[in-house]
Length: 82
Image (cartoon, rainbow, N blue to C red; front, side):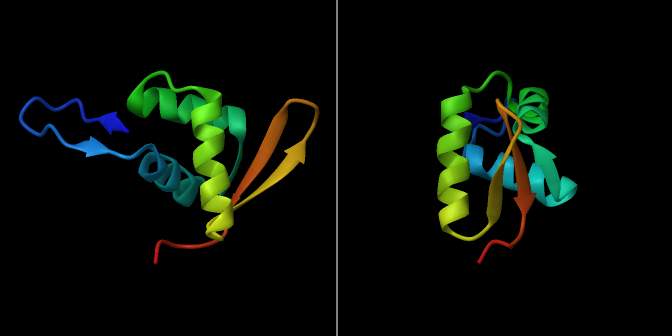
């Protein structure tokens, strides 16, 4: 969960919503690009936390995750929120 930066609006936004928005705009990217995008929006997040959300999104049929090289993964947006 990520807290918004606005002082008057103190909502907590789930990390998966940020991930979904970034992937929906880009359609395809690497995990390292996603992490950089998340750092700009919400600050530092752990790789394991992001991978956990990506696994849940992959199970729901929203994204595909492919191995791309030794350390990086390729992410592909395939669905929309239902």
